[in-house]
Length: 111
Image (cartoon, rainbow, N blue to C red; front, side, top):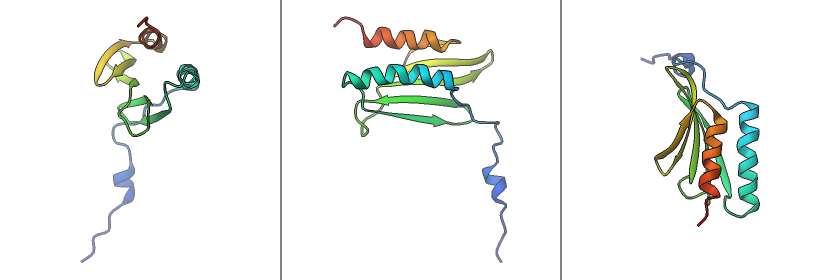
């Protein structure tokens, strides 16, 4: 006997709406990304959205693991942002600007 399954039971989002980056967030992140592409450092990026977080990842090459990830997620105290590199958290803040400032410091530190 064939059992009929409702697609809505599997597609519906029980955990809430996915978290997304807003337009202003994307403009700020893409500004840094474009500068790094112009310098020949970065070549690809990815955006992921889940009910738990939104992730902006940058890559030197598409086949590699991301060099950096900016994550937006819900915490007990509201939305937060985090900067990670190779599974190591560099900065976490309520402000995207603080996280991006930490990214700039890492990118432009003297060698």
